Structure formats: structure tokens, C-alpha cells
Image 1 (tube, rainbow, N blue to C red):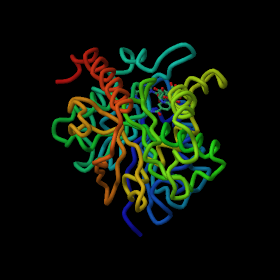
Image 2 (cartoon, protein in one colour):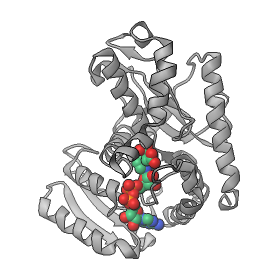
Image 3 (cartoon, rainbow, N blue to C red):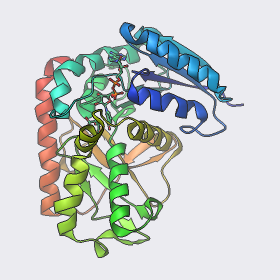
Length: 326
Ligand code: NAD
Ligand code: LMR
């Protein structure tokens, strides 16, 4: 049997954590041949709840789960970690935007970036989920000078999956029939869900839906989906967020399908004219644990203006947390 992969999950006793840890332990993230060790990191006030999560994990008797570590000490939580999933942070409530969380949550990611730098595997791969996720990933990476910034990503896979679901509903097709969906930009109201390159059953999506539908219905629906869920549930998305984490890490580790791509927020390398100082959602392909930004996609004037709006927002967020970027 392969050696176990060590996966650290912060905020493991929270709503997303509770939906996530059982799926990782069941093999959904790395497949049925890959054992895992879960390292669950919480704050002291949530350690009692975390002990309950641990008991339930034990009670599931997952064959692939080789060990569980629960701790409120980041040095222990990130020790030798191969994957670090940074969920632990405050969620927004009704009427807030995700960036309103920035002052409360940002410091968590500078501390955890340093702890990852000092204790995790040199090959660790990090995905930031806690909001505002893109800027928190920028902070974490900046505080981990011994690691490459390409090891730090933020999650826009939930937006990507939401976009697949809405387009499948509209075209009366299956999600599995749709490829080449893209979310550009920030995990925020300025994100740009984009179907111009999308194929449905191998045909251009724009043969099946109109640009007016995309601009007036589809784009705002995806941009506001998080708020729509908070309005309905009184709580932010949790099961769908956990599912998107599974997809994000699965594809990063094991690769994306031929002729398709996924949306991941990664450090900009200047692709599509975006400032290199932000973590931006791009279409990417993954192979053997590495991602590459898809190059050469045509963008019309409207699209370029949407990418610019999201870049401007990210530069504004960066200005607010500048002091946390050493
Ligand atoms: P939650 O309040 O249910 O759980 C958060 C957990 O994090 C709590 O158990 C808390 O004790 C823990 N925590 C707080 N600070 C911590 C720290 N420094 N170290 C370790 N653990 C810590 O919240 P939730 O619903 O699970 O959401 C978590 C975050 O994920 C929020 O910021 C939310 O906005 C964000 N989110 C992002 C996406 C996305 O698509 N990127 C989707 C959904 C939610
Ligand atoms: C989401 O997209 O559901 C999360 O980012 C939670 C939120 O605040 O919208």
C-alpha cells in the first residue's frame, strides 16, 4: 500500500470542516488506493467540538484513514503536511460582502503561512478557502518565503461548479456534457463567470444560449450565489464548499481531463495582463501535481473590462493588508 498522504484541515470543527473531513477519509479526494492521515487544526474554544468530530471519524472505520491528529497548535497541525486546506476563518452573514471579513480574518493567514513555511513538507500544496480567499492566499504565501508561491492557491472551484450547474439547467443538458467553463478574477462580486469558450456536448454554448442571458442572468446569478445561499439558509454554503475543495485538490493532485480545464485562483504570472501581485482565478490544466494557466484565449472588450474590475478589487484588498506582506 502507498504511504499515507498527510492532509491538514484548519477549522475542522466548523460547518465546511464537518462536511469535508469525512469525504477525504472516504477516499473521495485522492482515490481508493491512497491512505490518508488527517491533521485537524482548531482554536482552543472549538477543541471540544473537534473531539466529537474525531470520535465520529473513528466510528466510521474508514479503511483508508491511517491516523487522526487533533490540535490547537499550528506547529503540530502543519507538521510534514502534504496538503494544507485553510478553511478556519469567520464566515460572512447577511448583508456583508466577503471583503468585509478582511480585517478579522487576514491575520490568521499570516500566522498560518509562517507555520506552513516552518513545519510543512517542502512540497506542500495549499488551498485557501476562508474568505476573502484570494487575498488570504496572497498573505499566506508571502509569509512562507522558503516555499514557492505556486504552492499556494485559493478556491474558486465552487463558483466554477455553480456555473456548470446553471448552464446545464438552462441548456437542459448534464453537467458532464459541459467543458471549458471559466471563472476569472476574485472570489467575490467582481468575479467573471465566462461561457464564451464553453462547449456543451462538443458544441459552443453560445449556440444554445444568448449573450443577453449570460450578461443579465447567468453572470449575476453566479456572482451572487453565495449571498443567495446565506439568505436562504441563514448560513453560508458548507456542503457545496466542501465538495469544491475535494474537486480542487483532486484535480490538482491527479490531473484535469483531456480537452478540459478547471478554475483555480493562483498567483498571477502576468497572463492576460493581470498584475503579478495578486491571486487571480484563471482557467488551468493540471498534471502530476502542477498547474498551468491556459494561454491564448480570445477575450472581447467586455471580458477585458470584467477582468480589469476584478484585478482592481484585488489590488484594493492588497492595499488594506499591505502590512501583512513582509
Ligand atoms: P464556521 O464558522 O462554521 O467554521 C469556521 C471554523 O474555523 C470554526 O470551527 C472556528 O473555530 C475555526 N477557526 C477560526 N479561526 C481559526 C484559526 N485561526 N485556526 C483554526 N481554526 C480556526 O465557518 P464555515 O462555514 O466553515 O466557513 C469557513 C470559511 O470559509 C469562512 O471564511 C467562509 O466565508 C469561507 N467560505 C469560502 C468559500 C469559497 O468558495 N472560497 C465557500 C464557503 C465558505
Ligand atoms: C460562498 O461563495 O458561498 C462563500 O464564499 C460564502 C459566502 O460568503 O458567500
